[in-house]
Length: 113
Image (cartoon, rainbow, N blue to C red; front, side, top):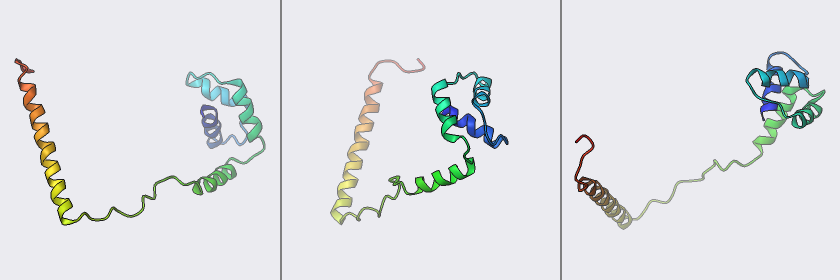
């Protein structure tokens, strides 16, 4: 990813065909060593291709990938008895929290003593 990011930065800067040395220069300017094998593969795969076309093609491919964000409809409303049960559960949780807080006071010392 770091190699691709450097390649894209060079493309945004106006270099339409960045070389491996250009990418290495960007990475070394921020203290990152380039992986020769990955960099050579990236350069060979992107050689002669237009970055804007690749981005547009990738965007259309990503648009067809399900991302799980649809969510669907909301849950059905609980019956009247369900609301009462939920209220009781909330009260029980509050009581448990209060008991926990009270048990902290039994330690015999306070934070600012």
